[in-house]
Length: 327
Picture (cartoon, rainbow, N blue to C red):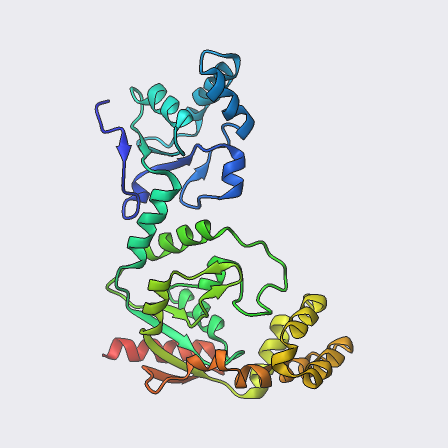
């Protein structure tokens, strides 16, 4: 087949390809590429041997046997796009072996080029509708309700596997490397219709060890702000349901981390309640801190697109969508 060997742009056309990650397993594990399916074709040590001895060696013959078996996993009538890092030995071998039988391309530039492409996705203009409000008001719950209603939802906490606060990872779930987070984020944005609103929630720049790109963070700050309100009683109930009994040890560590901001006496009181598993009093103490912390005041601006009572998220979603569609 006579077609170009290299593809230099992925975003905007990823669905046109069956994307395979041909990097060695160690590299894939170190920096997963969420845009490509891992092939698992070789280990790092095998690739090193191949570089030293070439395809005419025993290791080269073994790896070519694995290359031949890849065809069992090809989708009919779907071009293959290979992702590899320089010198792209395995990608070049796969391209050479299958190009006469199946359309095969190589993504040119590796992870560095992909991240550069991601930056162009982040720089696009988006119509962000940003849910804001104090801790426990139910921003994530409203996002989930909007998603159920087939709206475009950017759930940054889900992408980062972190809830974005000192207590944001009580379940100790593993976060992906920053490069992987950026590619997941770019892929999600790339899937949206830019002519329609994108619902998200206000976040700090960092979600655990993952950082929101500065340009995108600036767009979020200038998006249409939707202020959610909820009674303190319901906020406490929501926090207890979300955090109670998951990991008291890490919850205590978080309180100790903040004790110089909360105050030694108040933090000691919170820890005492935690020890007795009095989660309602723990939540009340933490809310008192969150509500008076300067880092949480950025949600309060002079102008809001709308203000919603979020005691019923289904009703809030319907009211918000009704307002958008009436304009």
